[in-house]
Image 1 (cartoon, helix red, strand yellow):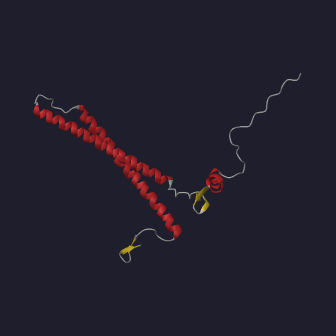
Image 2 (cartoon, rainbow, N blue to C red):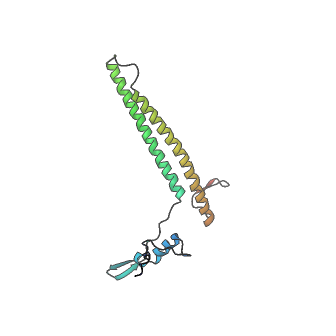
Image 3 (cartoon, helix red, strand yellow):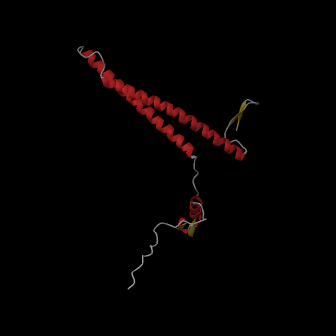
Length: 170
């Protein structure tokens, strides 16, 4: 009796890569525009209608989104730093009030106030620096994108100051 040979491997569950095919981005866009599953059938009083897929939303530049997130996170750090400093002020005022009522209190404020002031100051200064850097990068990137848009359309999209006539031009 002959021995059974090795079994042939079964079909893979992973999709096969097409050689020389479309790029994944183009394939996704083509599938979205031509796939019958993306179209919607609607039934109303006038009958049945077919609606095309929704238009793609205008995407912002990834760097602009990154800089916006940086400004938001930096603003949160400024807020947290301010809250910590405020907490230190509350603790210090409470200590001063108790000291004035009972003169036997220590001469130095509680150590927690120094910790709160230090952490709050570091967080607030770090947030200010981060917001300044992210905000300047965001402004520079948006100005560059506006310049590219003006070059493409040959017309400015915002009000500008006309130096020759000393007035705003829309």
